[in-house]
Length: 489
Image 1 (cartoon, one colour):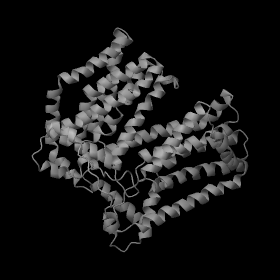
Image 2 (cartoon, helix red, strand yellow; image 1 turned 45 degrees about the vertical axis):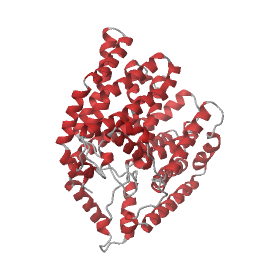
Image 3 (tube, one colour; image 1 turned 135 degrees about the horizontal axis):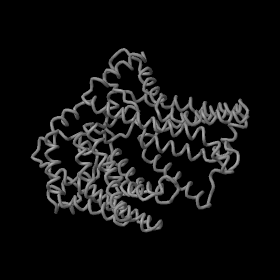
Image 4 (cartoon, helix red, strand yellow; image 1 turned 180 degrees about the horizontal axis):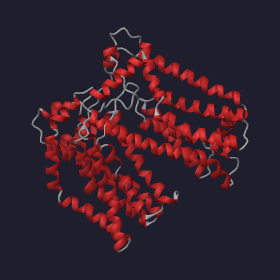
């Protein structure tokens, strides 16, 4: 039966209208996966010797000390990025399949997710190194099995809380507060969590505890999805108290104001769009990797420009690049109305511009790391407003995967697409500003490099009308392909 389900999904993949975009997306994901595999392998083989040379103590105990952060970050990372496998259950409900088989197949696909297997590329070589250093075999195996069970527990916890924003907010907040408290020596949570992980090593039989917890979580997930696997259950709408928001102050902008009101309501009311806003907010802290000299390889001016682009462009990248997919559920209706593409695109443009300005203001704390750090943030913001804001709208015309606003990677959820054209448009978003800075830096000096990037961004305002006419023409050309793609399930 599992082979039959795999065959159906294989045919669905090759026969879908988005096959060409899917294949490019899969290639890109494979390259990304290869990169992370190499990183995990290098850390797995090298962590023991790095910790030992640093004189931090027993490498295994050091790893156990910070394991709570590893697990917490893994869970948050899964919630933000892990896509739950898609199983179209509607055609199967009236066929002679047991519901348990369908649910087991869907949950089973999460087990072989890269988010689970990637950890093995760290723990397997690290455990091998421990054995070569004469650590007891039984204790190392017990510890290793316990760690892998905990990460699989994260997998099913993510499935169970995937559509519960409150749980994510609380966990992310606790993760940040605990890390900050330990950094500033207010409270060290590892004092209480390290003995738990040490326990798995000191008493190998205790590895059974996380495996029992894993079995219980699997049963809970299985029971939940089997219970809700009904056609009317999937179609039923959740009844909530109706609330109206007029946002009358936007009426002064005419049709543009109408589009802006729709976008604001879309962001406030839907899970997927709120996740884009949260992602954009966390991008603000991305610069800490580059401006604090925490990572030596990033401690140069070129990487600072790269960081400035991301710090101020979080919302621009997470939301802007999926225009018009955000409106996919009612896009055919919009296209049947007397709506001008220029007004529609302009409203999206203003939205990402406002978000970029807000991100720049929130990122003012980078002044603490020196004027160069905040200069990189400012010129990154100018480049995002003047250049990248157009590029994300341009690239959005080629992203033809509909977005389910009310879900975010649910167990029977949705997926996103990527293609060669959007990949090519990524180069001027990220590589071009670094090249422009390098030109000014090498010819004159660092200040000239910043001025060159800012000047290039300001040129975007000069050619705004011409660029918008070009983007409008692309959207009109892709209109019917987009409408057809949004009909695909």
